Length: 547
Image (cartoon, rainbow, N blue to C red; front, side, top):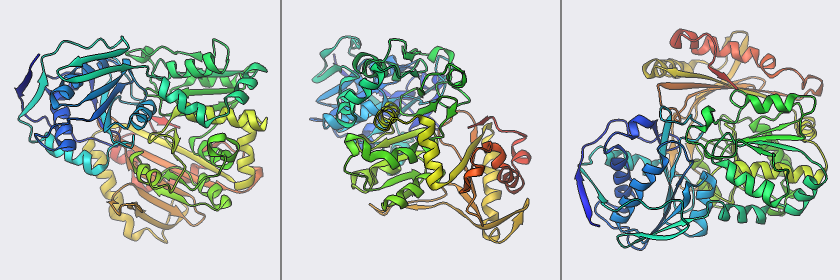
């Protein structure tokens, strides 16, 4: 075996988005494309030409198409860089929250996640790569920008001519002087879950006949759910379905929301529905929770967990604070106020929660995009959220629907929805946002589509820990009654641009809590169409997806 330097040249478009670099598989399959990005990453992290001697790296992915060959490429390049050890999940598998747990448990210098999260897989699908820091959380914007800048100056990458590592065999192998240890992908994360939740109470609930339907969507969450829910907690053997990770997710779109998990929704709306339904996404960091005949919004889920956290062993001493992404509904803010703890509002992207968690300023955090988590790792964690719900049901004896309706009764219902307009030509999406931003100084006090605007801005965030500033994070338009709409472009797609329209209306009147959400939000929907001229700019009369 020997170290090799390969001549290369920059590729356009290697700037990471909200959650790393995501492109079509065919883009990543271009000779040198992945190698260039990994070289730029190692140069940005360690310094150009500097060795990673003595350091430990964690590598794993969600099992989608191209996962295995990409891991072999990274292992060779890590060995060439001089890493002392690389920990890789058996079969190349590590869920995103599990990778975070492994990084933290082994005090690794960082980790590489291979996933495009909830995006489709397969040979014609999406692929992605992102870097996690030593705290287990996503790289900062400063680092991702440094990676991009370095990628634009790449002239060669360094690798080894070593044969492939046997990814399915547990134990230590070597490339050059680097130990490659293939580890059980479930063990570290499962151990963490045992510390946080009342497993005996959950097991007793399953033993008494409680029924859960868990859809792993043919993705990486399956092995984790099988091991914990069925093998350890005694749920029936058919509780977890679509449990084997497949490279194309069985043709499913592994995004746990009512639009893409229709089979699960149908099961939970049936007359003989189980007590609870749940799903996780491609890399198992997102989750959806349903009750019998009842869908829980992600914003309400975060608020319920915050309101009842003291009932769970890992959070019995109380919460120090909570955080949510700016577009997420204000339901958790209302719970935080009642608990007398701070609530932080950050830009979209889990990386913004990292500083708050590391500084001990928050315990729970979440996003409207079906992501919730806590200070146990530095990623959102789908199975953690589902176990949290199971713990609450076991402890309170209340159903999913009862817990949510109690939240509404105490704090009012935050009617909420997200409308996605996908695949918009980037120039048209940028024109829409530019025109909208140009109106901001004149919007306060105006009446548009029958709605009076109290104020509007382009959200900017100053990190309370390190003082870093993130600007242009989404346009907020707030009405006199505190209803609001938010518009921003997503950074998680691979083709064109996605416009996300978020809508929220707080309703304190319990007699109006059963109104259908889109009906309650209709005035805001109409306002958004007039204000942003969505159809004019995009040519789309209706959203691609409504959640």
